[in-house]
Length: 348
Image 1 (tube, helix red, strand yellow):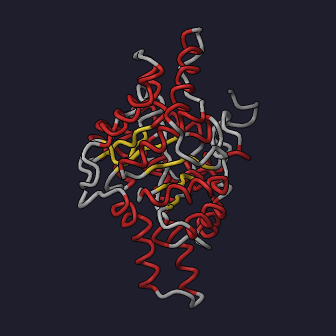
Image 2: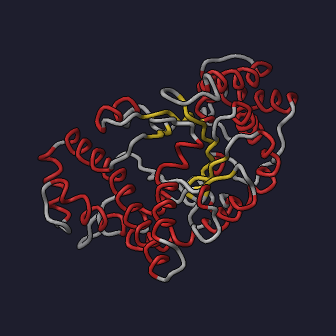
């Protein structure tokens, strides 16, 4: 949608941050006008812009959700090449199920086929990830809401749901998994692999209902899934980051990030990070950017996190509440250490 007269698409916290922090990477002054930024970006070219932004981000390993418009954006292999850092796949469960539905088959077999496909994607679960799939993701918040039945569905329920879905597809319905029974089946299959499971929570696109995306709605599911031993990662969480912190403090297998919010709230990002740290155990929070499409978002996410964690923990140190050594240790845990441990990245 075109911006109204007298405004630009850069008139937001994100747009101002982009002009402030990304412009120098394109050889422009900080706060360069929007038109100058767009013109210079075209001169530099998309590939070189991506290389500059991704390299400047200083990310040592990428975990990439490949389930959304994967044919239109940079692949993990391309991302690794541009940045000179390894990139690992986060497999989206709904996309796996949708590929199976497109391939045909019967309602009686779809549940077992989905389980098998999830386990194939996991590969040798339990060994350090060096390539391939490092974890799974569900967008249940978009498809059925997070107030789903927390229990593992029975085989008969799965077959009945598969039958409804496949019949709808046969009559021309889009191949989009929205059935809560099949979504739950995929989630539990992923938990059985032992790899981390990401769940989108909080703010998202227009097809997500925000009141059904609060991580607090997952409390019964989190209690039910604790015995699997698999980590559950609450993604993004804003504006429910305090509720997410409560879940992480209650359940030993629950982790969170607030990466999506840090880019979008711009100059207010340190406040959001500080609020998320109020209750979240420090070994339970992970850095993320939630970057998609523009390489600038990868750079902004990393740069903003570094500034924000330094500002927040620095204030704690200045107040005498933390030691400088503790501040440095927490920043390292959130920035990389927790991800290396939970996603079994080894020395990647």
